[in-house]
Image (cartoon, rainbow, N blue to C red):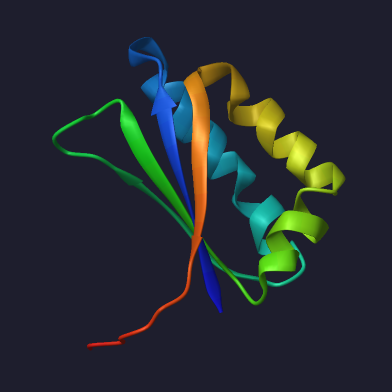
Length: 99
């Protein structure tokens, strides 16, 4: 499994609407091929920054299957207007599973 970590920078006046858009998008991720988990975390020290963390069975489930789907466009329609700048997206694999 890999984890997509998207660092999202949100306009200060958009937090409530952005969080509502992410909540509305949960079914899009739940139904996506290879998606096994999804959460949104807000940075305590920098409150305009969020991390969207999504577990995928494979990298291609995100980069090909989801990004090439209508659900990706629906996701961006729900939250894209709230971005202060483009998201930073990286992929991670767990190398030590402590506990």
